[in-house]
Length: 228
Image (cartoon, rainbow, N blue to C red):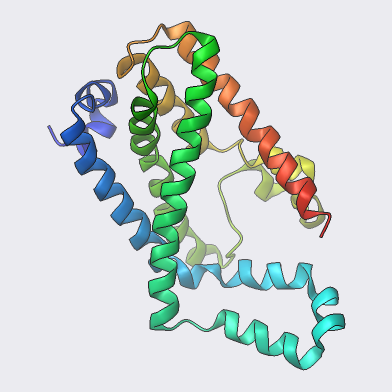
């Protein structure tokens, strides 16, 4: 059966079938392609994020480069042309590839002390397939943003924090309190249990440890961002 249909109808069996490397490679290529396409399609929705990122460093840029140069940089950043679309597509592909590789490395390292079976490529299969959840959330966000007129919308609890608190340690922690991220973690759990054949208890422990490390990494990166 089509693995993309089984993702919704029978994900446990889908993970069992992903043991076949040929089928997984096909799934992986399709997911990479769609991530690249979504990055290009979602480019117009990034306007609010671009403006916000400039506003965070507005005083610094204006002091160093002047008002005219700041306005010119912001204007150029907001321009959408064919070159930027292509670069965004390539960046989307590379971003997905790198983040999936790193996530699989982290989970694989956590699995060793937990006593889970499998080799690194098995964890790469799990995380690449589970990333379909992220793609679904991106598509839904693109549908919702025009309706509510807020380009900063997301599905996490952090969205409901007051403006100043979103850029805080609490805001970073609450970004993982997200129905789609919980669904993603559940898919990772199913992958550990079915593709690897791991015990349910050990699979839960590894997913929980992975979540803790993700939160810690986010907090470290947030702290580093405050230094500049």
